[in-house]
Length: 202
Image (cartoon, rainbow, N blue to C red; front, top):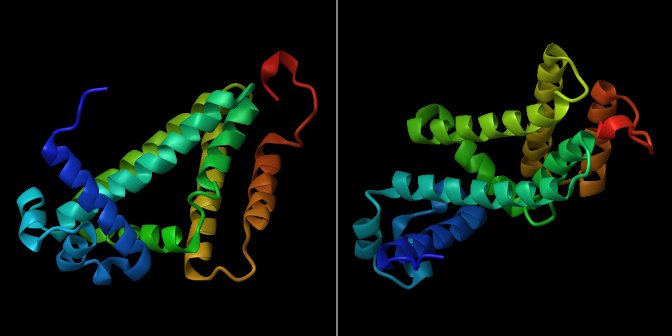
């Protein structure tokens, strides 16, 4: 791997510090001064590497999404059938590494800014496009296109809804409960999971 430049390292360190504070205090509490203090740098250094808070938070949003993306890719690589790939995408989105109150709260804070921030909106569109592509690559093996599109809407809406619910109130919602809900959506669109698969499509 190529060595990171000093600028790249500093930007990563500042983004990591901002991500920590975002989880603790939300967007309003994530100030450049607090980020600088957390990273052990001056506010002037932060402004040297980032034009302002919005640019820093954009990098944080990309960083948070890349962590989740890597988890999904890892699980998809272990799947042995199209249905298992769909299950891997869902499982990655509910990994214990990320489905935590503080991370849900941080993500909701960022998503709340999407209507007012064109860069955030562009990142969100890319996230949704990748999710759709991953799901379609598996669903097209056993669903007609129209039904696959409907399934994608149902699956992604359930994932987004559970993240929203967990971010707003963790009471009564656990990883086990989230799995029950997502399993029900899968069964609605794909039917019960069978123990044997013909042509590797179950």
